[in-house]
Image (cartoon, rainbow, N blue to C red):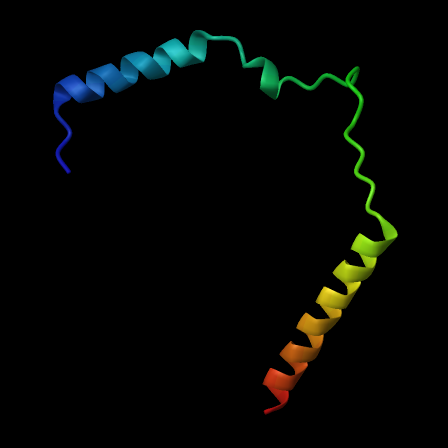
Length: 65
């Protein structure tokens, strides 16, 4: 890949411009907003446990042979 001086100058200009900007609001930590809460139903939890159990059993079978 070839980098021409014009391209390098443009990149440096954009980099300097970015350094002068304030950090985006997304990056600022604001503890006033509530945290997301996830509730998993009993059936979903049971399915998840069974899936993990299946993976464990299959992995043990593969490693034993």
